[in-house]
Length: 294
Image (cartoon, rainbow, N blue to C red; front, side, top):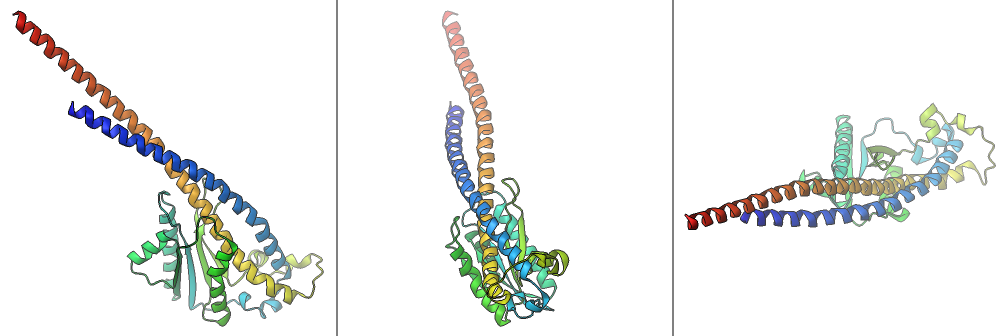
């Protein structure tokens, strides 16, 4: 019954695999909930920052702040690509890399030099494979990113932008809309464009609120603009972390379900082989008995 023993070995192997994928699914579900809580917690602060900056924004103030400077013709920009350090998350990292490649191609078609900064082993592995030179790389950011991580990533880029060596900074990340919707997205975080200015072309419509400013709008913007840029990167980090766990949970659930389907097929095949073996043995016994009687 060599075939039967082989099938039993395959059944045991698939059962062990299903236990692993089910455990990974449960771990990803737990991590996804915590990551989702961090995304939700980060949004009110980001919205408040955006509202205040939009309310203070005006064309005359924009001319005095380097982070609000709008280059007429960008020549060199930085693209920060956020990926994960681990796989087994379906097409999560592949989709982020595809989005980054499309963004790089679009910018380079316009004659813009793109400095690529990669966060995560999966992105690093891809760009090394294709031979793309990287401006920087980080592998030490976990699935629980901090505001300090965001500051470490973007502070140097802000300094380069203020110095005029960069004309823009973009971030490619996974936007966490829901557990089932985490599309790869690229946002421009420098120069800073307040949401009201994005929507109307000017910030005047949002400046109708009665604010008491101390000491003045210029001093407030000096503090808030770098915080706004850092917070944009922090949100991208936490949303990517949540998207990774969501993708891993989905991938492991599908793997567990597929293992169950394979087990059903293998068990039916094993039972049929076992029944055929038993039938053959009975036929041989009956034939031998008939031969002895004959």
